[in-house]
Amino acid sequence: MGQRIDVNHLNVYYGDFLAVEDVNIHIQANKVTAFIGPSGCGKSTVLRTLDRMHEITPGAHVTGEVLLEGRNLYGDDVDPVAVRRDVGMVFQRPNPFPTMSIRENVLAGVRLNNKKISKSDADDLVEWALRGANLWNEVKDRLDKPGIGLSGGQQQRLCIARAVAVHPQVLLMDEPCSALDPISTLAVEDLINELKRDYTIVIVTHNMQQAARVSDYTAFFNLKEIGKPGHLVEMDETKVIFENPKDTETERYISGRFG
Ligand SMILES: Nc1ncnc2c1ncn2[C@@H]1O[C@H](COP(=O)(O)OP(=O)(O)OP(=O)(O)O)[C@@H](O)[C@H]1O
Image (cartoon, rainbow, N blue to C red; front, side, top):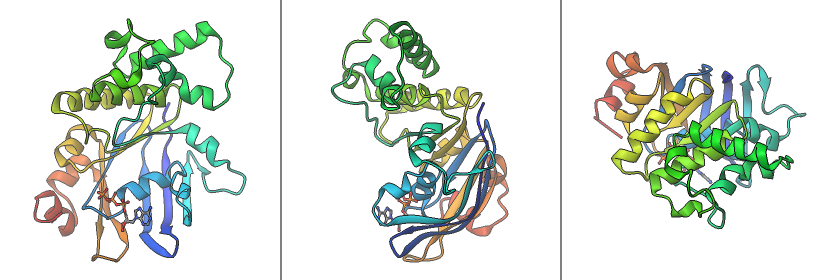
């Protein structure tokens, strides 16, 4: 089952630079939440705070809380590596490990976690994850061929299989379709719709039609002005954001008047 995420008074910094200010957001379990907004408003930055990847950038840090099912991911006793196991990430460009076969790509996260796994359990896991990513039928006869031999859309579904193979509770997706053609995009969007049965999904997208198609909730971020920190303007059911937003900034953005 997916887990809920509660973000309380989150300020996100790169060194001294406050990139995003005072975010308060409640992300429902087993739903898809889309982050939308103009370039530079901090969508990807906030997304990366949800699995503690933000801190990988030297000097980057946060104040405030991110609670995963009530547990603060920024608590003193929390291991960021363990957080990244519970919260999977799929990136903009499909990034299968180039020297690995399709099968080894699926198992890569499990092996990184130093889990010992028998051959038959590994076979079962590979099939389960690839079926979950809607890729099994396309690759089952070439599991030992390189992952990078697949099409872009297949590679992205392979990366999703790799992310789900470690059984995360949350899947974060940073523009997962921006490098894909329309048909692959629809395949990944269909998959997102199926995956929410098992995971909580947060997706950053520049494509408002995509947000409207795939998400249950939409969070609109904006910048007061260039050089000022980004902030969350409003979050609501996707239908409300697109048809009846409360804030005029949101209305102007979704009707294409800026951004
Ligand atoms: N590694 C970094 N070091 C310093 N500043 C950064 C870094 N990454 C992002 N920023 C800054 O943080 C702010 C938010 O950037 P971010 O990439 O999160 O925005 P975004 O809304 O995802 O933009 P886009 O839609 O263009 O991807 C911007 O001012 C950006 O310049």
